[in-house]
Length: 262
Image (cartoon, rainbow, N blue to C red; front, side, top):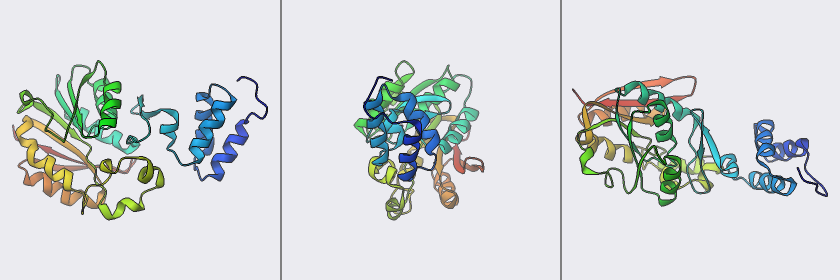
């Protein structure tokens, strides 16, 4: 680091982060120290984190499935539990799959899938222009990214061809959004969180249209909460798909998979 009148020490950073309520202050301090280009930059990074900005927004990236994904202010940060959704998608994929990532956000899930399935034909879409900008950055050379509402922007040539339809839809009930941590509630787009009255509004739309896009034997995969799992399973089954629920106790993750009959 370059010289500064009062440079922050590692202990200073940890102390400030802990005082701000950061549970993993030591780990976060190490990341901020490694990202800083000098004392002034470090002070700025720490101030942004102490002010409540998500750590990933401060750093400019999030780690997901072992890769770094670019994120920034106003963009949904991929959650570690969603790695379970990606694992299930990889397990459901044939050798050369056609993959669609709806509600793709920053493109984190698509990037992870493309890494695990290098032969995949990947398409991703999101309604939020900011998310689409990051997705195009993260999926450059890996797949096509479209801006629009759910299936609307996808090319019609994909109908009946999709082997893996990944839809990490918002599923927080509207009345629960205000109970979320401030990092999510204040700094992430509400459209990426709010799933309507019971949290399943967007999922219903996806489930209703999915059979027309899936190839025979293709699968729709969505993440939900444990308390919503039964209703989500029923919702996906109502669309004509054969549903099942899989759970990861390690990641506290619940995924519903609906498969189109072969």
